[in-house]
Image (cartoon, rainbow, N blue to C red; front, side, top):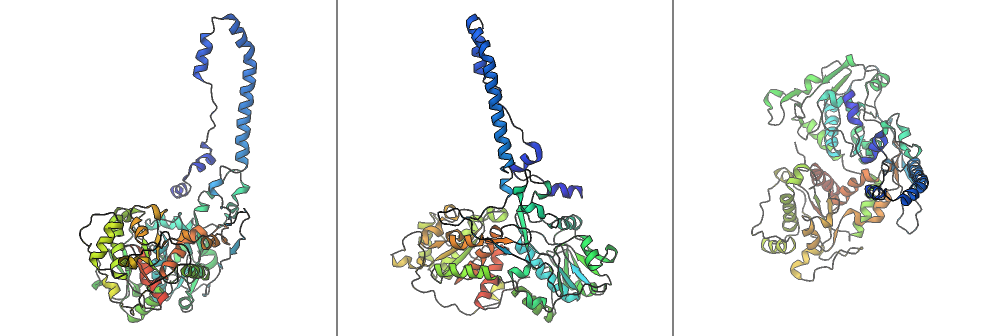
Length: 542
C-alpha cells in the first residue's frame, strides 16, 4: 500500500516540486570581477577611505534589494502562481472582451441502477484500466458475462484523461482502483483557495469520471441486465452498501493481462494462442458467493461465445456503445454542415509506442486506401499525386491488406460523392482546377493524436493534396462551446477530456472513413460508429 500511495503522488511537473518544499531561492552573492577590482585599489589610502565610507550604503541597498525580491516571491506565491498549472483554466470567449462564457454544470446521477441491494443478490465486478477504448471493451465483456452468470453488474464510471490506470497484476491493480475515486477530495476543486496544492490533490486535475450512460444509450441493455453504478471501488463500499464481505467474495486473480479467457461452453476444446487458461462460465454460475471479483476483462476475444443467444446479446451490447450524447451530436452536425454536408475522414494515430515506430508505413497505407478505395483514383494517377504532394520517390503501390472480418459483414453500396461540395468555411488553399485532381477537392476531415497536424511531416501530403482539409481545431466556435461544460462530479471543466469523443463523432458521420491499422480507436470508429450512424450492422471482432 505504501508503494501505491507513493506512486500516486509522484511529482509530475516542476511546479509540484516547488510546492513540495524542494524549491530554493538563491540570492546573488556579488560579482567576482568587482571584488577583484576593489582589492587592486587597497594600496590607495584615499580610495580605501572612500570605499569604507560607501560600504554602509551598499549594504543598505543590498538589504533593500533582498527584501524586495523576497516580498515579490511571497506575493506571487500567495497569489497561487506556483499552483497555476493545476487550476481549472478560465473559459474565454472568442470576442475581444475577456468576459468568461457561462458555465453549464453537467450533473451525473451517481445512484442510477435498476437492481436491488439486499442480502441475497449476487454481483459481478471487474477492474477497469488503461484508456477509454480498453475500458469500453472491458465493460462490454462485463455486461455479457453478467448476463450469462445471471448476476448484477457493478459498473465503474469511465475514467478520462492522462491519469489512466495502467494494467497491473490483480492485487496491485485492486489497490490502485480502490484509490482512484475522488470521494473526500472536494476541497481540491478550488485550488485558488490554497497557497500550496495539498499533496492529496496532486493528480486531481489529470483525470475525471463520467458515467457510461452519459456517452451512450445503454438503456436497452440495462433494462434487461441488472446494474449498479459503482463510483466507489473500495471494500468499505461493498460492505456498507451491499453487505458483501471479503469472505463472501470469489476472487479471480490474474498476474498477466491475457491469462484468463472465459467461455460459455466446454473449455477443453477451445485452445487460444493468446490466452493461457480458460474458465467455464457455466461453472462460475454455480458459485454460491455473493460477489465474483474479476481482474482485467480487456480484449475483444476475452469471451469465447458459442451459444446463439449469447452471440446475439453481444451484438446488442456492442451496438449500444455508439456515442449518442446530444451535445456531441449537435456540435458534430454543426461541423458537418460547415464542411459542406459531405466529406471523407481519416483517423491517423502516430504519436506513441508501436504507432510511432510504424508511422510512415501506416500513414502511407491510409493515404492509399483513401485515394484508391474511396476516391477511386487509378493506381498510376494516384502514384503521380503521391510523388508530387508526398514529396516521395515511390515507384510502386504499397500492399494494402484486406480485412476479412469486415468483409464478412458487408454493407449496402454507398451513393457516390457529389461532384462538387462547397464548404461554408474557408479551405486552406484554392481548389484544384486540373480535372485530373478534381477528386481531391472533396473536404477531408483528419482525426489524429498529433498536436499540430498541419506541420507534421507525414501528414503534409493530405494538407497539400486536399485543399479543403480540416481538423477539429479549425472549428473554434464548436470547440469553445465544450469549454462551458463543468463536471458536477469533481468540478473540473470537461472540454479537454471529451474533445476526442467529438473528434470521433465527426469522423463517424463522414461519407467514408479510413483508420489506422491496430488502433482500437480506429476499429471502434469504422466497425461501430460509422456503421451505426449509417444504420447498418456493426463489424464484430473476437
